[in-house]
Amino acid sequence: MTDLKSTLLEWIDNDAEELVDFFSRFVQAKSPNPPGDTTEAVAFICEFLEKRGLPYGLVAPQPTMPNVVGSFECGSPGRHLVFNGHIDVYPVGDEAWTYGPWSGEIVNGRVYGRGACDMKAGTSASIFAYAYLYRIREHLKGRLTLTAVSDEETGGPWGTNYLMKHTAEVRGDCLLNGEPSSPSAIRFGEKGSLWLTFTVSTPGAHGAYTHMSPSATKIAAKLILDLEAVTSIEPSPPADVARVIAEIEEATEKAQGPGAYKTVKAVTLNIGVIHGGLKVNMTPGQCLFEADFRLPVGVTKDQIMERVEEILRRYPDVSVKEMRHHEPTVCDPCGEMVRIIQRNVRELKGFEPTPILSIGGTDTRLWRSEGIPGYVYGVSPTNMASADEYVEIDEFLHVVRTHVLSSYDYLTNS
Image (tube, rainbow, N blue to C red; front, side):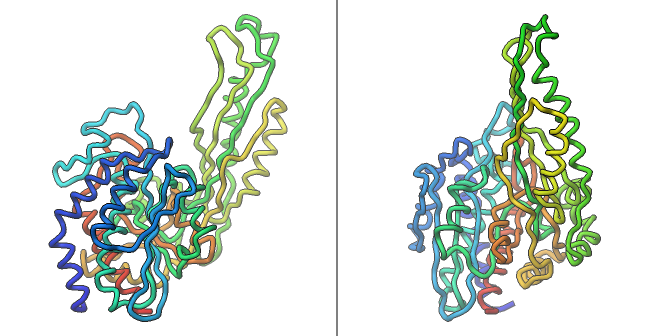
């Protein structure tokens, strides 16, 4: 290990208490999306950057959802590395929390709170990596850019999507993201998604006069069952990706839970929202439901829609509208950044993380879809979107170390 890498590790060790305090207070800065107001959390990040004299600016196409973008040139020419993390988090419902969802409570070596895992741990790692590398920028090659965005949870029209279209400096040659992945895995690709809204419309009637109108809710219930047929579509991934998929069952299950390997290879369907009916003794005249199809590598939107439209021919009372869509994305599972991360984790922890595919979606797809390699390395995905979301502090500090050292290697190998 070089002297500079040893210095970076020493800085992280000396700053461990500050790192954890930042992470905890970042969780306390509420940023649920929806509704999507992240100004409190953005102000917290900006205060940190300003105190350290770090270059940054705000890109705010939506005033309540500013994006933090910082960038600096290194000491000599080279490649451009980009960090990406999101500031917004899932909203909090009626679930019971042991510690308050916005408490950032530190208990038994863990930081608790909404967004701790998804993904304020990873975004904190990006921010500190940006700060540490700025201090040694004269020893690096190329350019480093930080993007901390405010609109990932709802698809990113005001976040990364906007930046990719309007801010050229965020593209770069490689992307490193700290979304929850598990320290045992590096995510080199992810499933796509297709969100559809189905609307059932019938005349409606008095609940006793069922002969006067079909029930929109009953039609919706039957259609939902029939839509399960879409999940039987068999994927045809590229040969090189298929070879990798065949070898990652154990790593996928370890990182994403039992059953994840089957899920990562299959089309899945979740019915996330249903609205129908006004009163118990009325035959509903309208029912709306929202369906979330997830597409494995080797399945396209066109294949999904062909099967959906075939099913809908049996349902003349139903219309469908697309809410959101992105195709599956992958990059080289043996790329340079993968090898760099593996080497650093091996030196830090004694094991080598495995390249796998992600079940969930991240903004990393937007770089991959532009032909830019994008990789995810983060904490374990513990209790995401549920009560008592938390992150192990040891894991958080490990991710910080890995991002700092791996970014250093990338920006000195240029």
